[in-house]
View 1: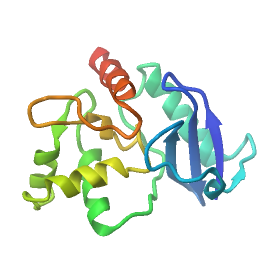
View 2 (view 1 turned 120 degrees about the vertical axis):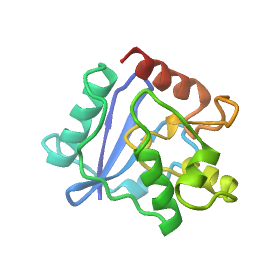
View 3 (view 1 turned 90 degrees about the horizontal axis):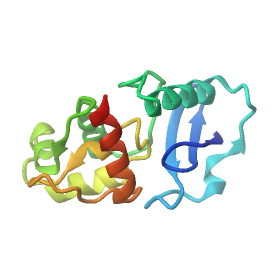
View 4 (view 1 turned 135 degrees about the horizontal axis):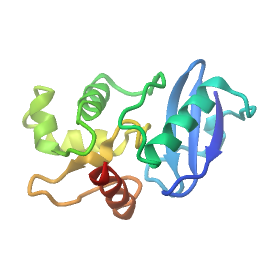
Length: 159
């Protein structure tokens, strides 16, 4: 495990890699952010995985990228992975509700559990949990804070 921190319109982002895959992307003050000592050593500036992730994020924030190709390998339960995969399928500039995600993964009564899995997404922005909203269209729950969620949705609305 190794990490680096990059600047972004959301404030500093900590990118965490293990092998050739990104395993975490965390905001300062994010709910459920692991302790910094769990991120491993500070990576060298030429780390290929972290450099690629940082460049894709730079392009995304510049409005030049709508999807990510960096390899991902988040740690989580089978249920969490099902939710995160469903989140990853929400197209750029669109939104889905927690209830719709629960339907999509075949667990229509598990809306609260889906919400918990969304909140524990370790790859925020890249696995676009900011695209998940309340059933009535309300901006609800975001581990990075509602202002950051609003910023990301506004960025994508311009694209």
